[in-house]
Image 1: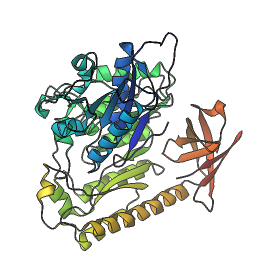
Image 2 (image 1 turned 90 degrees about the horizontal axis):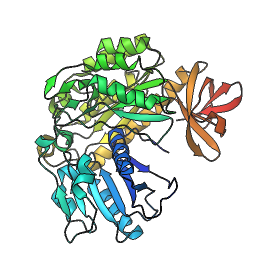
Image 3 (image 1 turned 90 degrees about the vertical axis):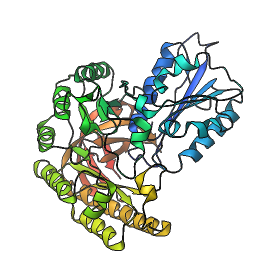
Length: 465
């Protein structure tokens, strides 16, 4: 099973093979998830709700009776992807019931309901009530729409993935109060809200009772963890301290966290923890203070640099990823080069580069000084090349060092893959004994293909980007 770290252009296919006995006569349901780890965690949780009601989960191409498509709104291609999936679903099961949920469903419910083949659309406040609202999933003449205003999405719904025995995505927070000029997420998911620490710990204990070795904390803005019923009652630092004490889980990984919410206290805690791994993904978006202000970001480049330097001082081997938006309105050549030089000189390990796209109902869509698309694409290419150089430099810095690799059931061309604690991807000759095992390896050299050879006593292992 593959996992994607980018929200842009990311698709996760949830493949549920038929299982168990006495399945004749059971309704079959298939799921397809577009977007981020948070969507994947929610799809997984909704799928378990179906299972508990006696439905049989199958893969998308096994002639399901019901298709549930969980959508994303981050890129401008959300509508095209949604339409394509609906067409494919109807080719596979012409009489199948197709329900659309997720961020795009909240933003454009009427538009989606008019797509040929769609039977139901459910918004942010309704998607976890899918079984209740759709009842017998009978196809009707017109698509049913259950999508209240985003202000109604106030409840926090627990979610975590359970279909990969190596890694689980655990949802701890939802929504966002920031309102950045380019972002539709507050419109699609509502205001920031979180689970109580006690309940997160209970979910973590459930996960610990399985074979899972690594838990990835996910949410829209996880550094803002602690808001319940509109008021701050807990804090992110208290959450990670509590999780660190849960036995039975080898690794915790923090997903994307805003630089202004990544405190020195949290950095110091991760540096001293044996379970929280040395890996941070910190959105930058721009290295120009002028553009950061225009975007509505809540920090300047100086704070970002301070956080990165603090991490590298305490954890020199730590992997740091950064999100960057290219072509935001007002991004002159000079301001782009500010970003390029800032990142070039900053000890980050890799970049996720997003080419700016205008989104309806955002402030950025109405801004002047629009950057031509060919310029956006050219600049994106420059930063992606820089990202490859940064990744290679990070690998070179870690040559000769020893790390722990968690091998996954990710097999390709007779090779299996895994990740070190500091997010270096490792490749080894397939050995079923290694799956879901943590092994010690030593990085030795980078070969002509840009892969890093590593040494481990019993197995020939390689690391590659």
